[in-house]
Length: 110
Length: 112
Image (cartoon, rainbow over all chains, first blue to last red):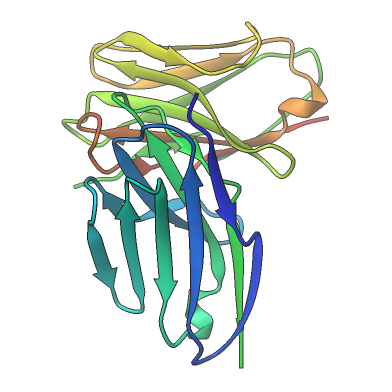
């Protein structure tokens, strides 16, 4: 069965710095999602990646997918405080069932 | 277009009681999935429904059940509540697999 691992679990970043969150998955996944969750809130969809080499960018966030390595990354460029949240990756295969990673809690400080 | 709605938003129940949570998907979406989120276990898949048929079920005891109606609205039921059932229950709707899942605001269930 599909397993999804994220690292790091916790990330404390200074504003203006760059960093990457990694998401590894164990078996075939035909899509990879990234979500953001603010404390006490629901999940906000950020990106869906469907094919090998897919890259999507929105503002300071860029997500990519390497299906051969079973790896997706979420790159943060020049972090700002507003990006502080928990980020989840999730994979699935053939149905709408999603398997989520453990989440990365990102804290951006001045 | 209205988003996914979930009712109620907050619920406090006592051990042994049962509870029913409701999810209304985005108009036109026929797929509804449910997830449980707890600090200890993270986000775990409960059920997936498509056109009133359960397509997948997660590893939860039989106390957890669900259904989907002809208008795609879905309900989940938890019987004989336990303290460990306290969680945020999220539902998501989509047009189908490989499409973007849209999550509702969640129902926060507290079992005392």
